[in-house]
Length: 63
Image (cartoon, rainbow, N blue to C red):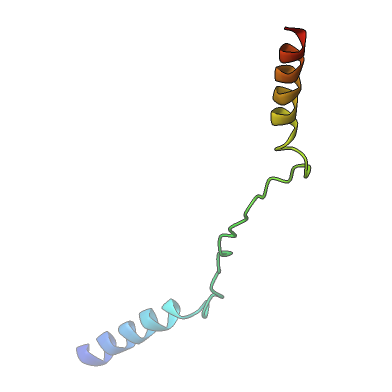
């Protein structure tokens, strides 16, 4: 009789554990890697050397 009562108690305890069913898994979004590309004008690298040459030419012409 004790075995039947123990089996009944265990079966009731086990059935309440599954009462809610399976929860849907929560998937975290994958981290996105973004690359930032600096865009500059096409003549951006030429302005400073041209100004330097202009200053040197003006200094040479004044002597």
